[in-house]
Each structure stands twice: as C-alpha cells, then as structure tokens.
Length: 582
Image 1: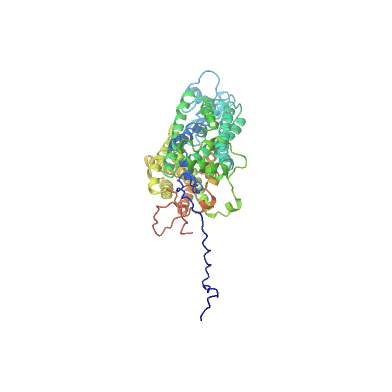
Image 2 (image 1 turned 90 degrees about the vertical axis):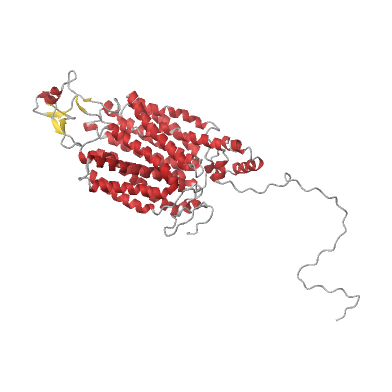
C-alpha cells in the first residue's frame, strides 16, 4: 500500500515508547570526577557480638578479662569456708578442776560406741557420771572441753557449743547456705539479663561486703544463719555475673582458656583460705579476710573502669549508642582499638534500655528448654554424687580420713579437672568430653558399690579419687557448656538455673550429715543410676566448639544436636548459615 507524501509516517508496533526528541543544549564544562572522600559512605551492617568485642581492642579486652578473674581469689573465702567454720572437733563434758588426766576421764565419763566409726569405743562426748559414782548417767551440765587438732581453733561449733543436743544447727546452717546460693543464682541471674551485667555486679559486691561484715559480728547462731543465707546469695550473684561477663568478653578461641584460668584462681583461693585459717585461728577473722578485699572491687563502679558487656549492649535497643558506634567505626578505623567504646562506657544506661524478652517466644523455644533440662540434670547428678566419693571410705570401712585430706582432695581434684578440660575440650569438643567424664563417674560408682567387699583400701581410694575427679570435671563443663549455648538475652538466667540445680544436688551432703549417714548405700545407688541416665541424655546436646555466642532466642534455637549417622565438616560457624537438619 502506498502512502502519500502528506500522510504521517507509520508508527512502529513496538511497545517501547519512542525516544524523546533531542533538544539542543548549551555546552557544559566537564567537571572532575568526584573524589573518594566526597562519596557517601556505604551503609554499614549492624554490629555483631564478635565485632563489638573486637572493637574494645586487644589491650582493653585483656585488662577487662583480668578484672573478672581476680575476684575469684577472695570469693573462695566466702563460698568455700563452710568445712572450716563447721568442723566439729573431738569433745567431752567439762569436768571441774584442772585439765583431767586419762584416768579421771575414764572414771567420770561412760564409754560408748562411736556412731560413724565401726568397732570403736571411747569416752562419751555427751554424757557423764553423776559425781563420778558410775551409778547414773546424765547429760553434760557444765559445757564441753574441745580437743582441737585440725582446722580453726575457734569456730562456730566451739564458740556456741553446737554439739550433742545442738548439733542439728550445723547441718541447718549448711542447708541455708546452699539455699542462699540457689536463691542468688536465680534472682541475680535474672537481674543480670534485665538490668545489665555491670549494675548487677556492683549491687552484688555491695551486698557481699555488707553481709560479710554482719556475719563477722553475729552474736547468736540464729542471726549467723540468716546473715550467712544473705551472704551466700550476694556472693553467688558476684560469681555468676563475673562468669557470664568474662565469657562475653572473649572470642571463641579464648573462652576455654579464660574460664580455666578463672577456675584455677578459685582453686588458689581455696588453698589460700586454708593457709589463712591456720594463721588466724578464728572464724570471724577468716570471713573478714574474705569480705574486706571485696571493697576494693567496688571501684568497678567508677565510670570507664568496668564497662557494660558489649553483647548485652547490643541487645539493649540503644539506637544512639549503636549509631555512634557505627559512625566511629567508619570514620576512624585505625584509632578504634582504644577509643571506640569511650562513649558507651561513660554513658549511663537509661531505665528503658533493656533487652527485649518475649516470654511466649521463650515458652515455645523447645530446643533451648531441651538443652537446659539435659545440662541441669547432669549438673544435679555431678554435684550430688561428689559427696559420695569423699565419704565412701568412712561409710564403708569405718575409717574416716583426716580433715586436711577431706578438704584438700576435692580442691586438688577440681584443679586437675580444669587442667584436663583445658587439654582436651578444644580438641575433642564439649559434648564428647562431657560424655566421657560422666561415663567415668558412673563406672567409678558401679565399681565401688558392686565390688566394695573385695576391694582393698588402696583400690577404694583410687576409685573414689577417680569418681571425685570426673564428677568435678562434669560439673565445671556443664556450666561452661550452658553459658556457650544459652543466648545473651537469657544467659544469666540459664546459667543461674544450672547452678541452682547443682545446689539441689549438693543438699544431699548436709542432709546425710543430719541423719548421721544412715542410708548412705541407697543414696549412692540412686545417684549412680541417675548418672547412667545422664550419659544417655548428653547425646541430645549440640556442640558449641568454635561457635559464636548466640544473641537472641532464635539464635539459641539453632543450636541442635549434630547428626549421629554421618560426619559433618565443621568449618563454617553454626549461626552463619541455616541448619540443614531443621
């Protein structure tokens, strides 16, 4: 078809619009290319927990870690002094006149069989003859004389005569002290998650100093027991807050080493406690020596000395702090090692800056609850069964070891357990070593219970030490494991629950003392059976080796048990990619 010259041109059927007509423009002078300094900075990603820790700088990080380890040396004076201040020395009724000879004691005191030591008879500790006539026996009427050869010369037993009819006050004091630790772990662990690590630490330190002084000036056993309960709660809060703060200041490669150093510092404190006890010989001076140095650590409250945990700050929804951190990181990367947290350290946190915790989401976090139940059950067994190994020889053979052996054996076993964990856990993984140590605990119990009639004294001692050593390693690793797999938003409460369940296991020791160790065999059998059940439940745990600490509940849900059927390469951090098994 032809078109006339006057007709408009045909329009293309293409759906693309025609380009606009070119408009003549005036010549524009060429402008130079913009410099890199004038370009807008690319948007930076939100800082992660690892980045926040690295922003402190190596020097600052090491100093803060040292500040969290040093208080353990003196916390041992407050948390481990019960065996010294409640030791009951040999005693008998006070007789008139000068120091009686052996013949006078035999004529004035009836002989009776010892409760704990088999086939042992000696002068009665709670009875005496009336006027040395040996016709009638009465309770002690003029008090008691004590033959102190071990421990403190003056403790609460000798000062307030907590023997015979008043002996029950000693196990009650031990039970109240353990319940105080339990209360402090739960209450102050939750406070550390809600209010912050630094605030909770300063509050716990202040309460420890106050109640430490009140314990030292207690005039009556009832007041002493109440003050010891409060002191135990405050000291447990200090220990727990330092533990989680120390872990949150470390990258994955440092967590085990730093935790091991803190554990060895506690062992050194327990050895120093015994040395101070031999020097001062007074329970008031001993507890005062532990409470007084804690006043020095109140200087952590000075702005800039001990800042808030960077991981907790990351969750506290302080947008101004996060923005200023990002600006500083982009503007001056070279100078950030020592100054990037200056503003964060100096600014007080407002009352509304708390990490958001959704209780419905926490209730439905089944994987977190599963891990917490398994580790709590394991902690309960490992803390409860350790007392069985310490007293097994005296319960079975009737030959109770000396006090120094009973005190130094658990302390040295705890130090050796930390060295074993340091040498093996980073190589074999948390779950594998926890499984091995719990298996050794159960086997040592089964051998002692099943073959106790055929074992020699040396064999009983060897298996008792082995069981005590493995149970100490299990208890220490449970706490580290929990702190690594619990998210930051509930880490204080999670570790507090595990420590509280360990305290429930420790209650078996004073309760057995209250019943004079009757039923020790059944008590040991029950714990041994539960230890074998704990071995199976440990298989349900995930592995936290070389993994970053989870921040939120969603991160904590990603910590799942690795598959048992195939070997999985573990070069990528668990939280960096979705778990293919979910």
